[in-house]
Amino acid sequence: MEDTEKDLHSEFESESAQTYIDDNFEEVIEIQGDIETEDKKARRNLIVSLTWPSLAENVLMSFMQMADMMMVGGLGTDAIAGVGLVSQPRFLMMSAFQALNIGTTALVARCRGARDQEGATTAFCQALLITTILTAIIGAVMLYFCEPLIRFVAGKELSEGVIREGITYFRIQIYGIPTMSLTMCMNAALRGAGNTRAAFYNNSVANTINVFLNYCLIFGNLGFPRMGVAGASLATVIGQFVGLCMVAFVVAGGKYYLSFNLKKLLRTDLSMIRRIVKIGIPALLEQLIMRVGSIWFTTIATALGDMAYAAHMIAMNIQMLSWTSGMAFGVAATTLVGQCLGRSRPDLAKEYVRMTQNLGYFVSTFIGITLFTIGRTLSGLYSTDLIIIGLAADMLRIVALTNPVINARLVYVSALRGAGDARFMAVVTFIGVLLVRPLLSLLLTRVFHMGLTGLWIALVTDSFICYVITIVRYRQGKWVSIKV
Image (cartoon, rainbow, N blue to C red; front, side, top):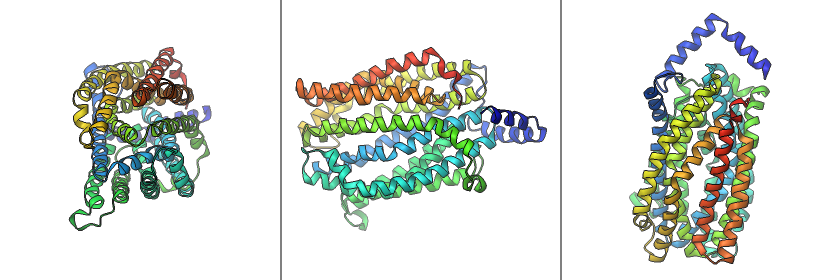
């Protein structure tokens, strides 16, 4: 690590190299702006410029996912519950890629902060190489275990019709792994470089195409075949492919601090891979813990029966809207913390986190009030069953009341990830998702017989406990000295 830093410093001593970096850096300034500005208004504008594309992207994706589920809901309760079954296995499938992307974003942000464009491109290309290898391995494994995994998540309470719908949906999703994984990798690298707009544009187009094709393929409209749940899954995969083409076009242009470099793509750089993996392995452990805990949590939910589980999935689908602000401000926190530490400005990193958190509280409170007010109306868009609508609306009120805390946790978590503090996040996830959430769920649903309400009380309790632990870790300040 020290040798690498010395090499970078010696490279910066070259006047021609410095001129090259400065010229390219100015081009990136148009997208992001300089992190070391002393003007508070300029800092706030920088946070907003990084946040609004992610916020718009997350809100749009939430609405698109809601529309997706609403269309599937037109096929009946079995279809809603069947597609809901796929959520946890799909997240499990994505765990390795999400972990790798955490390391990619953090490392690219460090290089961006240090004005090391070559290092950023190397990190990006090596991440693409690892992603390609993982895609082949995970795709093969998931195809083999597709049906057993869905049946395991379904448990013994759900009907065979629900299970068959879930298997149909998931099998097609597996074939979309390459488009999904490569798109995620490129978007993660671009976010680390300060370009959050690219992900907004390509995901917006991809999700719009997804919803349009849902209309065509689920019900057989506009001359297309009626494919039901299989059509919904195929529409998602096609939309993802379009998104991949768009983000690849952005990177190929080489205007946003990153570019494809065939030599770096085909040649293994063990030093860079070690740096990515240093963050990626703890992040992978965190993701696996989260997925195991979530699958356990889902099996507890399925034990409540078809109607309760359908209501649960509707509420889970809508609640993604409540997390949009936390995730968006979290993207800004990850990028800015990584870049500030790369520039050796931990004081500035803390200031950006403080400002980001304050803006996040305001937006998340507004979203919470909105969900509390119109939660029943939104639930009614998914189903005509009054019992399901009422259950889902009650769960949304629980989320709405705790929304500011949940979103604040996401910002602090993202800041720590931007600093490379992945090991601690794995510990926190273990406590919350693998201990507090499922064990409290079992206690409230099976001992106190609180049903779906008990399940969701456990969900928000997990978030609150992890929020307290995370903020203590952040205030200790050890994250500012982590080397990546």
